[in-house]
Structure formats: C-alpha cells, structure tokens
Image (cartoon, rainbow, N blue to C red; front, side, top):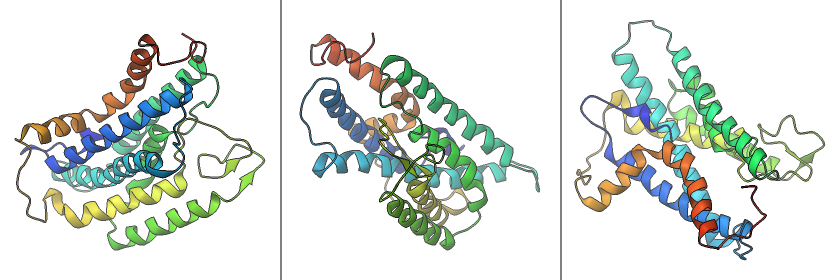
Length: 259
C-alpha cells in the first residue's frame, strides 16, 4: 500500500502497480460483501470458502508488495544518498505516518461503530513492519527462512487465547476478542520478509532481473496500475464511500451505524 516507495526517475515497475490494483479490487469486493453481511443482515459465509480466500488474497498481495517496495526504496535511496548516511530515520518516519493513519481508523471505528474496533489492522501493521523490516533489507535468502518461521509461529499462536490484551499486536489473541481488521506481527510479518526476499532477488539495485513486456499501455491494465498508484488513498476512502452508497440505496439496516 505504501506505493510511493518505489518511484524512480525512469518510471515505475508497472507490474507492481498492476498487482496492487488487483489487490485493491479484491479488497473492495470483499468489503462490499462484508458491509452487506454485517450492517445489512445478509448472510454471506465470509469466514470460510471462496470469500475468505478473496479477502486473504488481497491482504497477501498488499503485504508481499510492502516487502518488495521496501527493497526498491532502499536501493533508490542509496543511489542518491551520501556514503555512510543513516537512512533508518526516514523509514521510522514513514512507518509512523502509516501507523498514524491506522490510529485514525481506530478512532473512527470507535466513534461510529463502537464494536469491532480496529486496534491493530493492516495500516497499523504496515507502519510497524516498515520500521521492523529495515534491518532485514540487506539480507537475501535468510529472509525466506525467517518469513516461513514467522508464519508458522503465527499460525501456531492462533490455537491459543490469553487473558490480557497487551500482546494482541504480536499475535496473542485475548479471550472473546473481536475486531473488523486484524493483522498481527505473527504471522503477517513473515509475509513482509518473503516480500523482501523476492524484492532482493527480482529487483536488485533497482533493476528488473527478468524480461517482461510493457503492457501498461493497454487500457484495462492501465486502469489497474492507476488504482495501484493510489492504493493508500483508495483504502482510506473506500469503506466510508461503500457504506454511504449502500445506506442511501437502502441495503443497510438503520441503527447499525451511528450517523
């Protein structure tokens, strides 16, 4: 979602914008179904089957691209920075900014919905991950191994509940915990590290290491690329827009949202 990360003077890697655009469409479709299910009383099986994979596919693409984009960003930054310059503060600020957008969503869900408050959703997670991933950017194959370990640990933790909420950001789920959006460090940081691995292998030194025809001039592909370039903005505005449209069209039950 941090699409500004890999701007480069000679253009963009269109395939990454395209993938991010695909994820945006999957996310919007999933959230449309979610809004109809939760606020409108429709009965969609969103926690299993094809709809579950729809939402998870969008998340996995976004988070993989976070890792890839970080490797592109550090490669580009090093080209235009003084030797030995400490670049970490730049990524701390970037991570805190994304985390701040996550806090805004926490406030909005607390104010207008009241239950299912987003306390550590995907924006919180991406913000923290940008900061945590920086020391891993110089590694290659080890990130693949570490990513698998993080994922396995996170999947294992899902079998347990604890009595306090202070480690829910890490993946320790409290009893009766419910939220609209939850992306803990375990297992999801493992996906970021796999993205870092992929970025270092496929785009070292800010260059594509494989042949790929430029399809971005085709209108359908270009539309997805355009959405990918503005993914953060679309993420921030799409849910209020969807809820407003569904509410005005009469698909949502009155009283489920404090308007």
